[in-house]
Image (cartoon, one colour):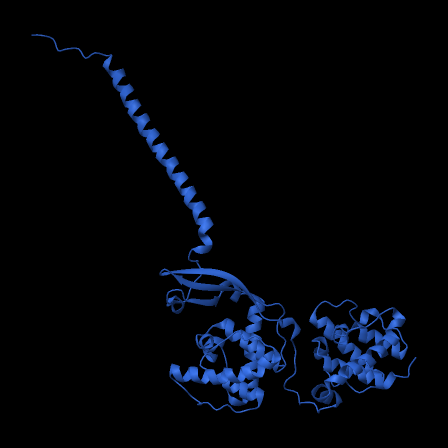
Amino acid sequence: MSAAPVRSPTLRPHRMKKEESFLGKLGGTLARKKKAKEVSDLQEEGKNAINAPMNPSTVDIHPEDTLLEENEERTMIDPNSKEDPKFKELIKVLIDWINDVLVEERIIVKQLEEDLYDGQVLQKLLEKLADRKLNVAEVTQSEIGQKQKLQTVLEAVHDLLRPHGWTIKWNVDSIHGKNLISILHLLVALAMHFRAPIRLPEHVSVQVVVVRKREGLLQTTHVSEEKPALHTYTDFNFFSPKPERDAFDTLFDHAPDKLSVVKKSLITFVNKHLNKLNLEVTELETQFADGVYLVLLMGLLEDYFVPLHNFYLTPESFDQKVHNVSFAFELMQDGGLKKPKARPEDVVNLDLKSTLRVLYNLFTKYKNVE
């Protein structure tokens, strides 16, 4: 019986070497694939970073805003901007103002987009503010009827605003489409024009998302939208009784050519006294707007020193300027003058007629003071 063949011990190390070689190659291949994937991922990340502004945004978009035709675009307010305290304050101030104006109509506005888009509230608001009746249907349910009403209301608004240089930033489609940016521009313009008794927050700026449809895909970009000059139109008093017309109303309406003569006379008068403090006025409408020169002028006319802690020598905010002008008015009344017809806010807002009224009262009383 022959013996079983003996397995050569030299074969085992050779097999191990082959296994190690195979695993090594496998590991090297996996490592190279992993590295290639990392490079690919890095390149993709870089590509995405470069193209991010052109890609659809992660901003939440209302379903209605996705129903766009090719190349059509729509604007909306970035959700983060809606949480801004100043933006919230602007919304609240405007809603409260509308509700105050329409209190007799028993209309209560809770949400601007939902309550103003059909033109019903805007019609009542304009009729109340402008004291005129619009020839429109009282109630309209159809979209066509609502847009026809809006067209009539907005045309009446434009007739009021355009002569005063307003830029129209709204239209029938944007208002009816519940575009809050357009609605805000419209309401702010009405509040400014009719000098509403409200204080609009200063420097309200929001991020606007512009949604466009390109090749079937939605693309978004962000732009900044600022309410126009809110800080220069605040605290107007539309609801107070309208003052009687005076010589300055007649001057502005019928003799504007004589306005320069009046201004020159008043500039000569105020500089006669302000020059004692090495101060000089060249522009009445701007240099008295912060109230500082008015306060100093009263001290010079009445021959007393006004303590600096009573007013802001270098006012920065609207409120500080209003404080100064109000304080000057108090000094005028202490000096025996009647309470000025102009309001401090009007002077601060560069209303020339109001400033002239104030200075002319001083001129009539103190023109002989040396």
